[in-house]
Length: 306
Image 1 (cartoon, helix red, strand yellow):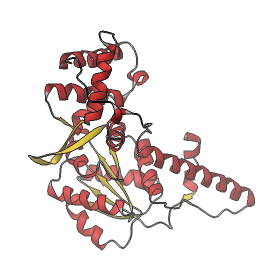
Image 2 (cartoon, helix red, strand yellow):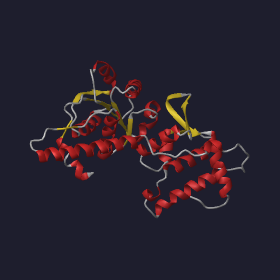
Image 3 (tube, one colour):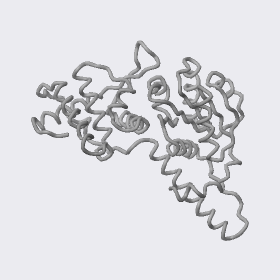
Image 4 (cartoon, helix red, strand yellow):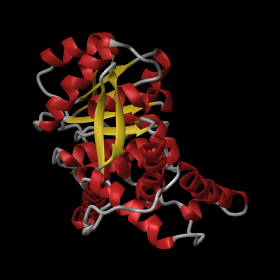
């Protein structure tokens, strides 16, 4: 990947429509501009979040719209995200929202179940990948500048094919990890032995203790960690917002959000809007997933499985 990146200066995006940038501060705008400019894309406008919605309505075309957030902009942000979700879903342009962990709840409440690329506290590699994925989803062509010799033309042709392959791979990965369909929904409703929140909590604690002795990356298993967290919350009759579930996943928030999207689409998790706060969403286990977990704990009994 690093070897390829040294050649990307030859990639010419000048034939694509420009990218529109919307940011919540000057510092946020600088970050967005750095990422988009590094890809060789033209920038149509640099706007505060509060003015972006009206500009989108006037913009004749755009390859993508990048929204960079470091603070909550309230209703103007909500309106922008609603429009972004609708337009990206209809294929009008690609959409990327870069935000912070503190803003996951109000942002994800609007777009987590959409085709918009959502990244959280991301580094430059992840930011660039998100932009490439957004363009690939919209089937934007990657164009290579004209070569002066046959040798250069062949090298650039190979580069074009490689970039296209990587973009396609990123597009597939962005939808979240593939989960093979199982027989979770076929587990019968039966009575299981009582399961306490402390039992599940102790299992979660044991999993976290591994990080004292080994790198957390060796044991990353966000789906299982989120399942356990939601089971504990269900037993304790607690509600779990998206931000808390991302923390429980013990992986970068962007990765956790992709897993969340996949688990919702597979019917294991259910997203419910907070009836008291339209800018927050709670996540809970689907009934079949809850029964499967309880049966699992009933079968392992006192075994120490982490």
